[in-house]
Image (cartoon, rainbow, N blue to C red; front, side, top):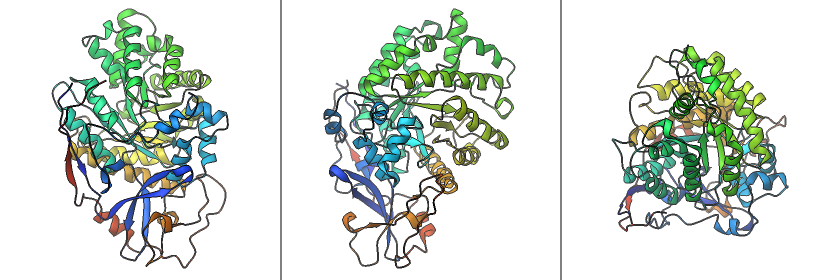
Length: 509
């Protein structure tokens, strides 16, 4: 038993409230409903879970309701990729399609092709399904996690809730301090979004902090433990090969990825190929058993503009393409992690090569930072690169906070990072002409009509991103907002939010 009593922020975001869109087979898809002074409302994509629902009862000790449990129990074990390849549209696909404002068949087809993923571990039934892919809204990930010197379980649970309140589509728990397992358990049981991890961090902790003491068996056990808990996607630095390590010697900033440096140190200590690479097929079998998605890590990503698109980075990317084919052959979903520091004129090349070598697997990038000269403001320098790389094909952006390169982010840094990246993602969605990116294609109602979801009508835009068809706009008699920008500005701070506490100790898995 672990006595933990976290408290989290609850209550609606100012200027909006939680509503639900009814779908087939009893699906209830959450939206954030923004009421305008013109008498219309807009329903926007919502990631906050029940924490912004005034009618919900929040009990952190019990965790969220297992939304997906009946769907999982009603079908034969498999992965979203295997179901999609078999022509089956799962409830997760339908749920994600409603959130995106697209046909469920598009979601199924993109997952079957490997160009989209639905991270949804069967052991995390509390999550609300979402899809990551270039044909859909650009997603944003927020990193949280404790360290050996700061933070606690209570703080990390609140960071997760806080990040999703402001729009984080997924959250990665990068804890490296004490109580890693317990912290992750509390986060998972209360997370409405997919949760990602980097298993090598916990494996290193169990090896006493010495990379040379790592082994495949130790790492495998950590992966199984995290799969059992419900982790939805895992960063695996299987592309850091022994022969690539010397390529980083002439770099300005060397190897800046923590996971990449750990595996490089292991390879050099043993003069052997990475166990993540040599045991990759077995790793696929483990992840397939739980439907956990690979996030193949860029362990040799550039840590400065001077090192962007160098031989080491591109050699690893080619290997990630090889591993993508292996995982897909075993019906395991895959996305590819991308670089951190890239000048704007080299951004497009990163996307082109990733799509060519990795079979168009969803690209998941940190920024990239477009310049190295602004520590303390790297949420801005990286958002510049993020908007560009998302416009040309990146599916998910990993946020950067003002603390990047300087320290660990606190609650305010998390909010700043998420909002900055939601703006960058939206700018890219506009450029991609996603049907939900413009206010004229969101759900709206006429003045005086009921605000209930059942009486709202959907503006009949049928265009999907990159399609050649012409967008059909809302009929003239449907009022459009004249003050949406001001409304959004007024919604930048919590209104009527409150703290919900859990005082009951809960067991850990």
